[in-house]
Length: 276
Image 1 (cartoon, rainbow, N blue to C red):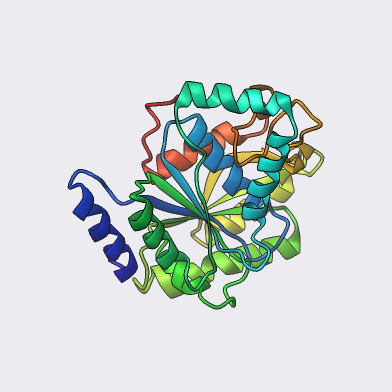
Image 2 (image 1 turned 120 degrees about the horizontal axis):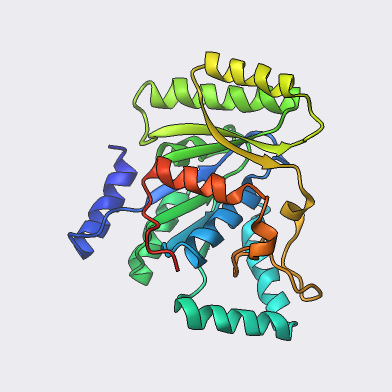
């Protein structure tokens, strides 16, 4: 087992022999604009606020730290909106949980900062999601990826994006997993920004490339919809992407998120039978 994960397991084992170390997950891609931070927030929020899991997020995508900044904007939006204040109050009354922590870090110290938070806050997580920089060249990224259990790679049917995404997956497979230099249990790809106007033949062609590369592709297909760009706002009474709330039921319908999360939980063996 990777030394950092062993340290984490020992730390949690010392607290309670019945507690298992958290599953560590990341949405990763070398290309920007494919939704890795958006999926991190959406999946974290649904698992934490709706599925009954204890969730943590480590934002080590420095220097922008987009999720940490989103948390700040979310708090400001709640402070400025009576509607959101009521929604937050009702949510707390129903689930009796605080918002999941967003631990601000960088790739070099991400694992260390997670351990420190667990120790100092006496925290227990079922799953921790890491938001990483978009390139393996960033200092510390390979080290952090080595401590992660599962990588999920959003794909877009664009030649440049696909070449970069497949190269990223193959490098991790060949340099880390195949050589047993990591804790990774698997890499899973899934289609994002699926354009209904795109020819089926295009996706089928890329699927054959993925299969030939012996990479695993989820069945979930996320449609190209503007709702994924919608953050929490004090001016709108609808919620989709937020660190404080799960998406509205009316917003999540047709988004593909439910299917993606079901597959993610099946792959990672996360138990969501205690849905709130």
